[in-house]
Image 1 (cartoon, rainbow, N blue to C red):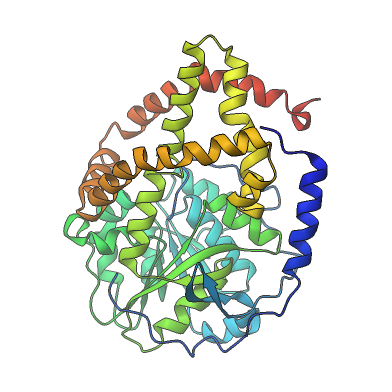
Image 2 (image 1 turned 120 degrees about the vertical axis):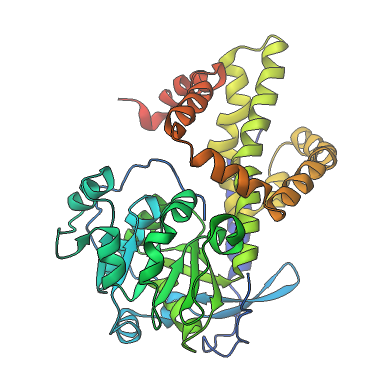
Length: 413
């Protein structure tokens, strides 16, 4: 696909000029109607932590609460300027954040909370991999690093950030510490929404809130360190204190979010599970593999098939779509590419929509939850997972991709 440099630059200049207009109205954060009371995030298995893991952000980005038009629907977006560090310190003056679990989200959110000047402790299994990882990140045994039970007992805000299967397995251990006046916090609606399968049913005298970053913990941390912040959704399931709404949005900022939008626990988990299985990961791997296999069957070399399937998409087109939108991409590519894309997009829509409808139905009725809990609770889970990932890693497409990635200018020594 051809996107000429001069055309792209001219269009970018026009976009920048049109963006200079009157700013949306700003208003106080809590004039909106209270959230509905009924309702990940994608969690990476392993991740590379930023080198500056213990450094506080050095860039300040001003943000404001705004009501914006999303495709014809008005929605309120909360931005972090309403919760400067001084305000966070006041709201959470009497709180101890107990981060239960130190996976990708536990790691990132705990460090961001700490860098925001709040009182944070971490609870994990003593002596395990996460225990040692937490120690390397500066958590001190007996002071800020405890067993899960100890941390849950000491904390006033219990941040339940174990895996979904881990939350089911660990609930009976945590439940005695979920006492009146405390806050139970999640970053995924899974355990609460599918409580019939997980057994996670909080007592009625605690606040139950959610802040769900729209990305992996590695991104939550890196964007915070860059002074930006990831976008996150916020939801309130129970408001026993009468302050859950303000505290939920404040927590969203405290964990490193740049802007926040409101949802429910139910909508968060439904959209998250569909997205992960769909266009974010499952569908994209399936589509990549299908096109690659067709090209190879027709005699194209592995390097050509990979470049035309994955490399051009991820390195050239997707970043431009993310920046300017799909219509901009169509308008700034060759006439041949544009005509073909416009003609074939409806065909792919018709072919894939029934699959997405089936997927949503399985998420909604709990079938995907049952599948996830069953597979991720197996004693040989890690061995089975590694075998599935090995098949992907050792497929011709991704072996070809490793070579192609090595040819990128930034990877040349």
